[in-house]
Image (tube, rainbow over all chains, first blue to last red; front, side, top):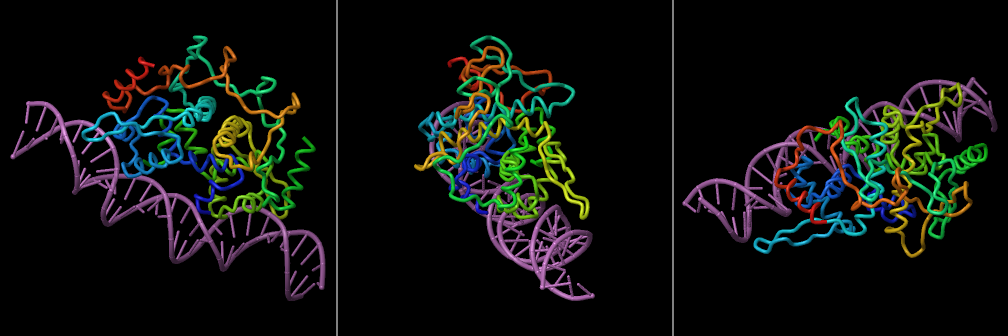
Length: 170
Length: 170
DNA sequence: ACCATAAGTTCTATTTTAGAACTGTCAATA
DNA sequence: TATTGACAGTTCTAAAATAGAACTTATGGT
């Protein structure tokens, strides 16, 4: 599969993955949320090669996740800052960090703690339903085709049947 | 950087990215949550090469995200199902899908709609603070070093200073 | 003149991925 | 008995992406 094709897929996960679904992009975004903004700072803190860093920054700018803002004129220099579209990635970053906190920490404990300035407490992120406010889990969610769904799934009929039976028996 | 090194980093995001931070792993997990379980079904629905699919499934099993369950004896066949650790990835998947729904859909609209069985309504996921229940945004969160933090950040002192000034001025 | 800072670009070697064909085991069918 | 098909992989070569280091360009300071 060509990765450009991902952007065209009728699947919101695939399209998002086309933007942020590689290791360096996610690490770069982590740095952005920690207020790193300049080329050499990204490079030094991540150990990414300059080549790839330039490529990924360009891509994130192209997708509207970052914006280049000039901070000096001679020579022309830019900072990379998150757009609103980029800031909206925060729940993704936080849910990734939270899963790591629960399932991947070693004996020393969490590398970072998060304080919610609004209430002043250390917190974990919780994903809830926008309608009733209850915490979400996969088993309480049912998926329907939306207006942008493809006509017929590429999944084997046999697989669809098995999946359906599994859904009904749960 | 060798990617095995990511697992060792004192950063929950990096460690999670070591597990799910590539395109195919995320797409495979999407299928898992849609109740796809078998090798050929993954292959047919994703168009992934069999080689990479075998590799990624092995990795997800090694990390304890999926488990192989035998479903027939002769010949021995297995299904790949999500463990609790895998089910806990749901907020990550949902926040990725939600961002795509907001920022990446075309004129036709969302490919999928999500119904919360508990309340019966179509919903969007919302990330809130575990302590006060308010929706989270990056600007209302302050990060502290935790017990598992590295002693000294690899980030340039100059970058740290700039980041600190930026944090204070916000 | 010389060095440092900053943001890239260019180069080659290595690793990863794509795409297709092949293998092994068993059940059902001709 | 021979053949076909389902299923879960493995093996192969070519193409693409990445790592690592050196180089470029523009400017300001000593």
